[in-house]
Image (cartoon, each protein chain N blue to C red):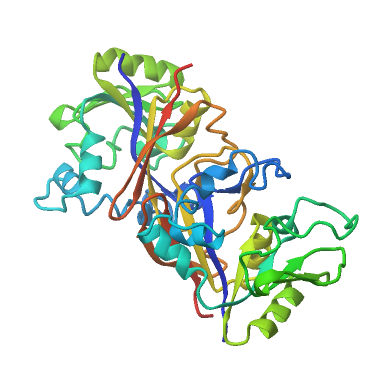
Length: 216
Length: 216
């Protein structure tokens, strides 16, 4: 069966997956850009965003693996945009311009319905208002044999972890402290939820830890 | 001036510096031994405990650097032993046998006075009942030009961090999740307290992150 995977999700050593006060100017929260500094230089990231060049090596290999074999994405509302509450209109079309880097159906969790949004390059945003489990089922139907990637953010990942629904969780542990922000682990007992370290790899700018759910 | 340093202090990626339920059988708490599995194989650790052999390499180099130039240690009460409350007698002489691996004065924070305890090999345990700042002053007097190493545990390190008294904090981030235990970072805003990453090194079994206090 296809897996639900989190890949390339960065956390600080003090456990924050985003900085505080996310908004249009700080989509990763204040200071949160430090979490992504392992990914930005990679060839994979540069290529996703239409640029030539970029670094190869372990960090790049792992970023690329996170994109392989994905048939659908799930995103929390805040990953799609900074707007909270009802959609004022349909003018917000995501952070990524007219050709987002997904190239699959993307299921966006929201309390506010909106028609699907078909973008260039095969990305289609579909807005799911009946809960995170319904979103997973719809993503499974769309992905077929391929895996589903859960993009975040922190509260969305915590929701799926608490329900034990994530099969593989790749964290890119960055050697920085944020001090404030969105705490990924607070109050979550991952071993009790069935998660253990499957493997880890030392990258150049992050330590890559792969957690997997033990078979029940 | 001599520095107050924390060295080779291991934390899980979910931020625990010890497992839960520390006692005589589990001095690192249940599951806490996973935190130390980067240190046990090193030549430095093996040598400290009277054994030949052990691995060399980055983890070993860093363990050895943590011992160099130290003129005094500070330990929380629980690092010295499992006894809580008043000392029933003087029979508990630490976890380490008659020749502990410190070879300097060791200031033990406790609410219960006890005469100094002189051990083989130059270690002398001195029990400090007038607070963590008094212990630091006594350790400075004993260390002279050399540095003071704060051994732990978690609550003791948090006490000195909150007061901004630690100059260098080396964390060995282990790629494991504990889920429960003593949380090193909870509620501590390290950047606001003046700490930042000075450097980091990828070891074999841990990522070594060196935090330093910015000059005020």
